Amino acid sequence: MKFLNNMTLGQYVPVDSSIHSLDPRCKIIATIVCLTGVFLVSGPYGFLSWGLFFALMVMLSRLSGGLILSTSRPVWILIAFTSIIHLFFTQGTPVFSWGILKITHEGLEMAARMGLRLLMLVLFAGFLTLTTSPTELADGLESLFSPLKRFGFPAHELAMMMTIALRFIPTLLNETERIMKAQIARGADLDRGGPLRRLRAFMPVLVPLFVIVFQRADDLATAMEARNYTGGEGRTRMYPLRWSIADTATLMLTVLFAVAVTLLEKRLMA
Amino acid sequence: MSIAVRDLVHVYHPGTPLETKALDGVTFEAAKGIWVAVVGHTGSGKSTLAQHLNGLLLPSGGSVSIDGVTIRSGEDSLRVVRQKVGLVFQYPEQQLFEETVFQEVAFGPKNWGFPPDEIKYEVEKSLSQVGIGPEFFGVNPFRLSGGQKRRVAIASVLSSRPDYLVLDEPTAGLDSAGKRQLLALLLDLKALGKGIVHVTHDMDLALGLADIVLVLDEGKSLLWGPPELILGELLEHDIRGLVIPPMVRFAGKLRDLGFEVPLTWDPVRLADAICRSRRP
Ligand SMILES: Nc1ncnc2c1ncn2[C@@H]1O[C@H](COP(=O)(O)OP(=O)(O)O)[C@@H](O)[C@H]1O
Ligand SMILES: [Mg+2]
Image 1: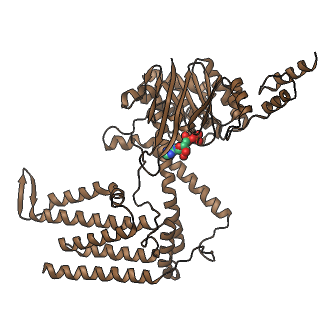
Image 2 (image 1 turned 180 degrees about the horizontal axis):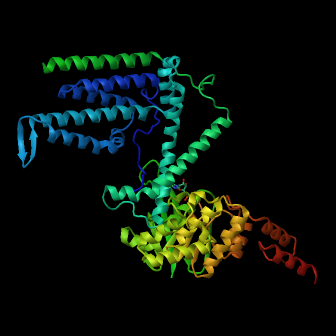
Image 3 (image 1 turned 60 degrees about the vertical axis):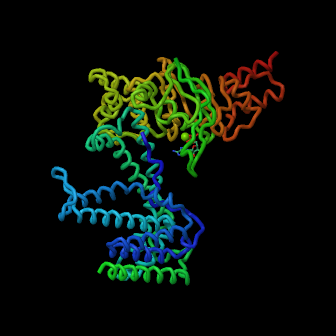
């Protein structure tokens, strides 16, 4: 039985690097720019450029390439699945057929494009959370959304919810592991049979987990209220965000790069 | 016929930055009809050790064998071990999930494939052992009180008819009446011939009830022997995180002052001894 030991999907890795020390708002916007950029390209030059850009960012962040790849491991299956669907279900000129299975030229192209696009999206999004602590991320989002507060948008509350959710992921994994072990000790068979049987076999884990989560949430809410938490209004900020020249420069370079790649690719493909 | 642990080593997350050596050469034995207490400070590896005794964790080094059969990976051999050694986790009431008390306690025996009439028999027997009457069989376990939930959870392990019972801090969070009831239950089970491994950080409990005590420190087995022997060692050496019961400190002080009294945690025995040593 394998337990949930090595879940590192997007877990913050504190390192002293120029990427880590950027303002979270800069990193959030730059990530959105990159994600948009990845959506706008569709050919080999475009993906290659973004790949190189990503490699450069990873080098600047002083994180190891192996770590980055391993954190994306949980979504590889999803990516492979998407690619395969596109591979077999895209109409066009056949290059290979076997019974009712048919691979078309267009299918190959689509599979590569969708797979690469999804992979890049996961890598860029994961890179943001790898290099930005949950608190910074929440502060950044709150600050970016704060203009909307005037229209009643709960920016602070959403940010706080996100911080708490991220904070509780490791705890939840621990609790899950503990309950799984307790049920296995009573003879529960959690990893045999088909998906439906497995889902049913997981009830002994899910039910107690729900109970614990609600209990925890309730306790946390009470504890926050007891310490007079009433929302964002008038609350002190310990580490106010600071936008520096480096942030402006990074953001401008990212935007320029995205525009350049998109335009150049249009040219080259035309 | 016993649980035999030899030079057991356990390393969590080997080869990663999170690598932790939780057990570092633990050796001891727990036989049927014997109560073994495992004591040690928080983080000394007690819970890790408990999980090794029924194959939830597998050794990084050394071995654990149950009635002469060494635990190794492979679902089928593990199932045999897990049925023989019942493991009661800390706060076992958190694992309750069925709709009725009866169903909850039947969960284990169903998993082991007991025939229906045997299941009914075991469930009723286990529940009566822990003092839960038939009027509760149809009740939703979530509606019970804390102490009752704990007893149902323990019954749900007993119903698998284990030869050994390993309990990780079973009295944590119970009031003193609940504690007393639970310990009385363990004594009954011991009298029925079950082997009890009682993990606790409460020296009072360990010394008062156990036949043999294992003291863990930093994942190593530091002391192993009957309570009287452990007491002497405890008084001589300060062991991190273990509080010596006041009665024992009192007896130790009396001995320092020249009284001939035994090192004991039992107030009645101590009082007798004091009286006798006063009157020639
Ligand atoms: N699932 C786990 N993953 C990693 N380390 C763990 C895990 N469980 C326990 N440890 C570590 O192993 C050591 C022993 O823990 P544990 O067996 O729980 O001790 P105790 O029950 O005596 O408090 C501690 O340092 C703890 O941090
Ligand atoms: Mg413990």
